[in-house]
Image (cartoon, rainbow, N blue to C red; front, side, top):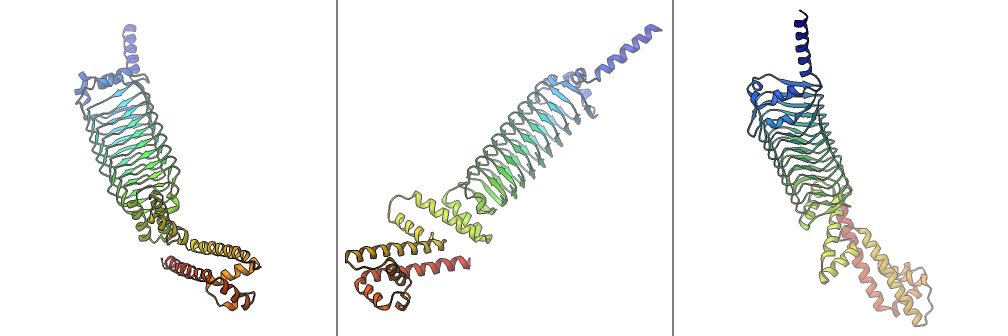
Length: 429
């Protein structure tokens, strides 16, 4: 009797060890090739509060098909997870799981929902060339090393919101066929979103703490970057926004390169991008039209002014460059009435100085006040009676400075007409 009780106690102890925190045997049985038939019976495989060495997952050979749902909660996974070319036909959930080593799901196919919730991935993570035919979520998760989602096909809803990428993140050449969300996600290192086909996208509140690249990508739905922070350079070279792209508000602290950018409706203010903007002439003109279409006329004028500055800098010495210089000084390329006022003040000083030198040369003692008042009367084309030092002195200065008087009146008329045109244009817009 005592022998039977001891044997029973031994088997109970073995059973408890199999289901203990260090229950490696149960994992090995679960994934062992020889037991795949047992695995495919349709039961849910749910592991809670277990720390397992998943090295035995190598046992799943290329082309394996997993039909059962997998749910792992509050667990630590030790060892590399290499599950390449595997088909998952049911849900895959990792909730509060710590992957302490590398994770690889290369060329895998996920036919049901995939969830990584509050998961820590401390090694390299690779999903290259995989297909997600249903929704996929990486919520509040942490990627410690390089994360690669290169050439991935996302067939359903995608969310990587409130996750953190501590190393480089590569989503290059991927395709999002439904809405995708990166709300309040943090990219500590470089992030690559080149050559991607997006649907409706939300990058609200994202922190890009290193360079980020969206070159040659297409956004077929609305793209919202409102509240995002770009600590270093942001590249949207040859990117296409088919619908509305929102960057209001956004914070650019490095370069914003939008050379070749194409868009239909861009919601952004000039103050947001003026200190970071790098682009070509075609994109500049598209920005100007966009601001005017949205009745952001001050932004349109400021953008046009910057565009003309850039064009002038790139021009070689020529009559065209000289014309641009004159247009800049006299009217700020037609959008700065203050430049016309400044030009008039400068002409007043120059002509007054020239008149003073001439009078000294002719030994005609005239005070600076008399001479500069005379030049002001000429430039403004007001009656001579307004000259504060008497009509005789005014006639004397006219008689001895006929050509200077004519030059002053011509310049004054030109500047006055230019000021009226520029100011009218500004007020109408």
